[in-house]
Length: 238
Picture (cartoon, helix red, strand yellow):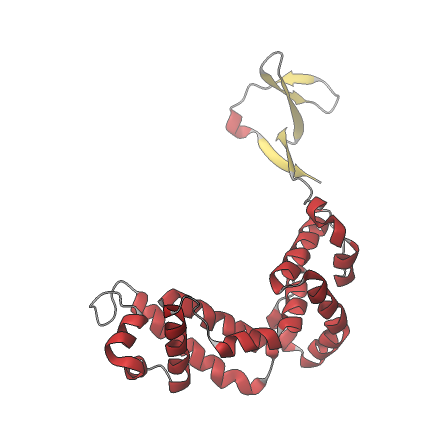
């Protein structure tokens, strides 16, 4: 169960960073501390060289007090308790995380869109004014995309599909492109990367008839390749 809680806490940090409230830095640090403690529990040498231990076992033995004794703050200890109890019913959840996911849904889509264009969250965070303008400009189309897709997963899938297709062709794309290509998503395939053989800068061809490689000289003459195959250089042809 350590990994599941670590994954939720890690994702929570990302969502808090997307939310962008400076006052949340203390929460983020608390989550990072909890993640480190849970990672140490999962390490081969811990805890205290007694071997790996699952947080659910600690809770079973000592309750929430046992979780807090590890150094995890009370609020996060309660979240872990909530997850353990709900997991016992078959659906491990933390209500605050679910609420945060819902609150940041639009910003998540905007951040994911810019990530697909090579602009990370950190770059957006460095210029608060720029980030404010970006969120203002893209809030409406991001909301429309979420409504069209019906879920965050499908919206992100649509963005990735269009991004992969456009980037493979060195085409620019706007968030509106997702809407225009919506009915074509299943047909949008990244351009196939083609590698062709060269030898000393000259192109090569393989003759199926003669079962041999040939080097095409600058004058267009086919010269039989006599070197080792590992000397053939494969280049991506745009």
